Image (cartoon, rainbow, N blue to C red; front, side, top):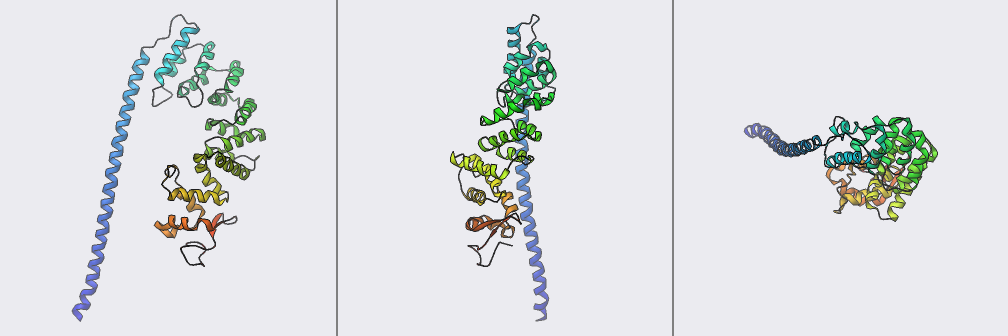
Length: 337
């Protein structure tokens, strides 16, 4: 008996040591696997970077062949600008020291209209060089021209902000936003919301309801003092559902949930458990963890959410969703703890 009493605890200790080192070995294997994966990703990024460098070198070689004509007229300047921008269309990285900027700055200010003609619409990569050039060349004498062109080429908001003319374009901004564009630069929203102008904010709300960039526009509107944000969120949700805009529904779901509308939770849970094309667009876990106490369920939380989302109600004081009766737990359980 003494022999057994002696070796039972020794056996338990050895078992614990074995299990400890087994777990350590598993952890090491996981670490080695992740390390290998990271190394492969870094090698892939290095190859991409090298490819970009080769492309940039080819662009620089082509740019060196472009010379400013000695006798300038409208046609020769248009050709000069177009050659530079066509080559630059394939550029993958941009910087303030790009040679295109210095090349375009060789032009006289009287050719600013040609630069504006070359200025494309929404998000054109040409803007990466034209905006810094215009920021340098444009002065007060070009103000009316820039504002008028801004009506059709909204990326010029960067130049307008640089020159301090934002107050002067409030009416133009409202016209643009109230025409329900599908997209405007996120920077335009960031620049005009701080004006705290009720008319401008109505335009931004219209864009939030009918345009894209839902999350970014919503975060900008949080700073506004002139609107009923909850009303705007509900209108955006109704509009997205009416036109069947799945992407907007997906981006509005966490916003709806934070405003106490359980429909947002239902969409997030549905997309987490489904295999449809939207599953990987948004990761809602962090939002759901913030709004619902289910962390103790660990790996079972998605199943728990799927089972209980229909029983959820929003507690305004707690700013969380509670469940009156859970379907996969005892009836007296309010929430997983």
